[in-house]
Image (cartoon, rainbow, N blue to C red; front, side):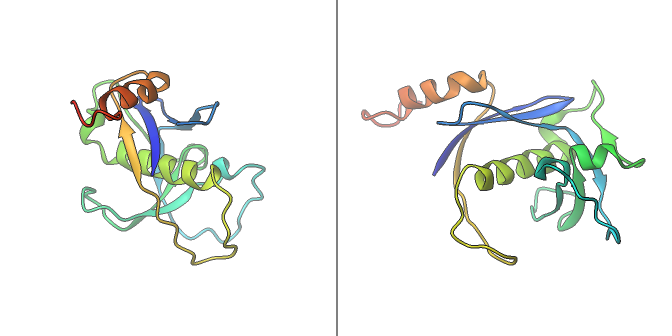
Length: 149
């Protein structure tokens, strides 16, 4: 189980994992995905986030999305407006799930190589607190004395 703090902002989503020094930041931008006949050679996996998201919470479940920097290159990309509700936004959920999946894969050495491998990662997620302090408060609430929250 991994402990993560997540901050969903209008312009980006920041994820901090317990034990990892640098936060992962992904622009909060999505575009509807499609088959790309010519794949660019990106110098970073963060520039190539092309995902299919399965979540019954989404109004467009099982759809393909370009996320973050790859979405920003697309003329049909969507960014959140100041008045959008991030708590119920499909876009925020897609970017957050993508960020958590990327963070999980990037923070561990995978024993499997190749395609069609499934990795299952369980998170305890904190939101609403500064992401760097969530680890401290999580230990207070769920410490040896049991759950107090």
